[in-house]
Length: 230
Ligand SMILES: [Mg+2]
Image (cartoon, rainbow, N blue to C red; front, side):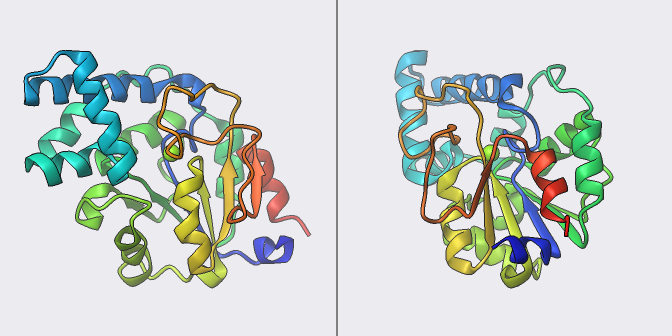
């Protein structure tokens, strides 16, 4: 697998909690916006809305996917609403910038968030000029990871060849289909407490161990630098 990693020519990165540290707590803001959306949509108090939000997240991959299937919501206005957050907790990361810039071949962002959100986050991290392609949830027909159709888009339309590609994620469940397709899988973990999120749908913790994960790291920039060394 070390050899496979060294020969990698396509790098597929998740965005949220992968290309910025979970400690910046952006997800808490998005999470709150989602609760507010569900609460207004279904006319429910926030604690009731939150239960529905999390149930959809666990069952459908994203809350939005559940809302679309169960309540026929309009995805673009939902995405605008939930991604309307304060990005000031993010800062430019020159170490990660250098590490990604040094990777050979094609670099792609593949996110369950919107393309607009990805562009704003990448700009705030100083990573905006490094990627050849940004695939947002709009591009997969609003089908999120880990559903197979999302990965099919990556292979069929973006023409990623898993045999020479690596998949980098903070959510172990999103690496399962990637592993099955033949990607090298890299799980980025942190020591942040995610126990309030539904089991099986949490970002990785330091003790995470999965058969479908080839590598785990708490330091993405350091890992990438090492990965391409002889
Ligand atoms: Mg993520």
